[in-house]
Length: 192
Image (cartoon, rainbow, N blue to C red; front, side):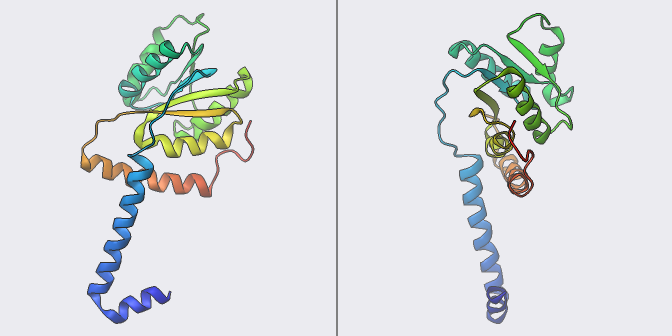
């Protein structure tokens, strides 16, 4: 650790400066990965999938895109959790004979479980392309995990969570750790 030793020789102010520089670099990278995403240009796919959580924000985006792009199947992650209540309610009251709506419950109720289940659904239905709707901060990690579990073309669409700076900083921490974890421990060893 020659850098650490050099900083120690220069004193506490050099250490603080080094820590501040690392923190600033992390914030710049996090903003690029989780906030300033390139604009998506959605196109028709075989199915549109809404990931669980924040369904009040995500479900309208998924339904609008399904209608606009004439996507034949809307698949909703049904978690029966407070943050997913609108999608869960939609799944509970829908016409269960409607082939255009599919509700699924991922094992583990997390993004890893959703990625595995999406891989299974793609294989089961023979989808070659999917659109996945999730919150802006979640796109990078979700895409990484889903692409580990399927050979289908994955198109990500971000919904806007409407966060203030404090919540964005919190999400940067959570998503940074989650993305590192997704890279170190892939969810699926072989896509389905």
